[in-house]
Length: 66
Image 1 (cartoon, rainbow, N blue to C red):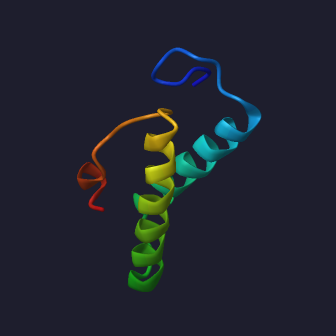
Image 2: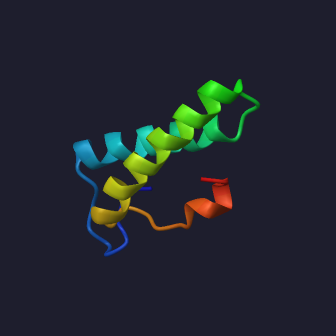
């Protein structure tokens, strides 16, 4: 992904936020111990707020069981 939802190029910081978001989504899809899974989902929700606020991506986290 090289642009946000408005078509503007991503800055290095925005790319870093998207990298974290993508990594957390991947972790949330794995079979983690319950305590780790809950904390990964909590972290994903917090990062998803930043991703949405920056108009980098938009999706319903309920699709990811969050």
